[in-house]
Amino acid sequence: MSEDVFKKIVSHCKEYGFVFQSSEIYDGLSAVYDYGQMGVELKNNLKKYWWDSMVLLHENVVGIDSAIFMHPTIWKASGHVDAFNDPLIDNKDSKKRYRADVLIEDHLAKIDDKINKEVEKAAKRFGESFDEAMFRQTNPRVLENQTKRDEIHARFAKALNDSNLEELRQIILDCEIVDPISGTRNWTDVRQFNLMFATEMGSTADGAMKVYLRPETAQGIFVNFLNVQKTGRMKIPFGIAQIGKAFRNEIVARQFIFRMREFEQMEMQFFVRPGEELDWFAKWKEARMNWHKSLGFGDHKYRFHDHDKLAHYANAATDIEFEMPFGFKEVEGIHSRTDFDLSSHEKYSGKKLQYFDPELNKSYTPYVIETSIGVDRMFLSTISAAYAEEELEGGETRVVLRLPAALAPIKLAVLPLVKKDGLPEKAREIIDNLKFDFKCQYDEKDSIGKRYRRQDAIGTPYCVTVDHQTLEDNTVTIRYRDSMTQERVAIDKLSDIISDKVSMKNLLKTIR
Ligand code: ATP
Image (cartoon, rainbow, N blue to C red; front, side, top):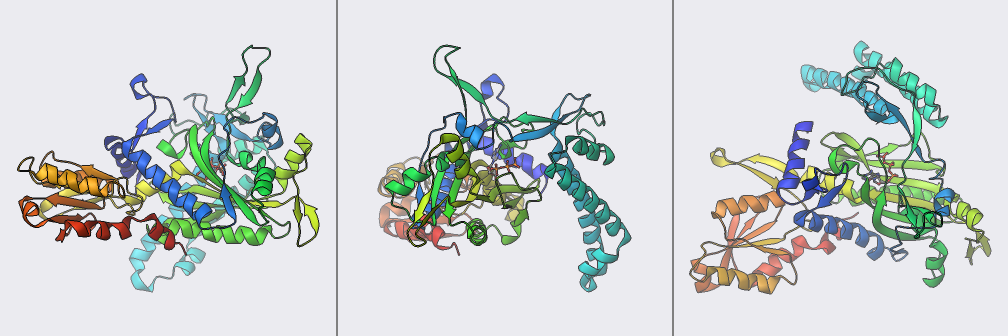
């Protein structure tokens, strides 16, 4: 996949009503997007897949929906006011601002690419006898690049850990990293920047309180920990799940819905006994990877990326990365957050946030494992994996979204062969019977071939054509999106044929 495919996916999303630029008629608002009529269905299905996998399938995980506005001291306690800053650097010629860590990470990725190309070339040259491990250990060009990469990486990790901004800048200079726009190395110093949006609550300017739009949903869970534990009579270990909007004033807002200023998160905080957190971390790591892989896009598209620099609250952290058209990128973070958040809220609020463990006969502040996934990044990874351009017999091409049927926005399209002879009425009758179970779409415009193409492009797994024979014997032609094969079936069999395949339940059952 390439940037070129990525551009096509972005325009496909717009053309078929999945994602629109926000405020488009006013020339847009940067890094803010709206979901259209198809997008909202896919997004809701993704959220349901996540929610059910957490709350339905785990007796000890419950959900909440906390407010976006919270007491401002919460963001002091979480560290967002003081510590959550990104290191930024400006290019003096293009006047563009970048995240210094992202510039260096991109540079490292380029070296990786060079190494991989070298390996691929050799693999082609040597054919079956190729020993990749040996090649990587001995080829001078690979070795040289690998050493260079390891050195930069070690400096980078140390600079991040020490929050050494000068060293970050020096790495950018030493690596001769240029601004992609101006092509120059005319960089400013690296500075810290806070990502939270602030606004005012209350009417008068002097009496108003500064509040923030939440930059993550997690804190709404922590401050409700005791409410849920007590009212739900929850016993540790247990989890609280939440889906909701989060806001970050991102500096480098690019790559479509990958990095937005208003986005949605699906987070689950799992409360455990101190000392057991790393076991639970390993369990959730595996569980979350299985959830992703169950979508059937291919296991090779996912990988873990363990963190070099642990956030101030974590004692273990990993990302689940997905192979986007522009490379492997983080879709989900899994963090062992220790008792940082609960302890900090105890300190700032002066309220006890402890759990009395009847088995151990003592009280403690629980440790927390967090799984945090961006709905929008999940959406982007799903569309990217599903998007395919195919050559058909006769030189025609089609664009098809090979979405898992349970996620598809429309499950069934019902198409009368012609707009007369009672066929439209018959088609509507079918929809009226099935619409309680499946999202259906009626389409009578253009040739059947064109209508199939439109449904392929939005990922509809089933199309049903109503023709003159239908009026005689109550049968229709059902056409399958992926194989494009067709068969004649009785109308009263449709529900059975479709139900199994589009059922969220069956998708959930595939999670290992
Ligand atoms: P990144 O390093 O890419 O900025 P992060 O590590 O800051 O991400 P987390 O704070 O761990 O992200 O948030 C959890 C998840 O929320 C991420 O894995 C991602 O899917 C999603 N997310 C975070 N920031 C954004 C954003 N600006 N736009 C869309 N999704 C986001």
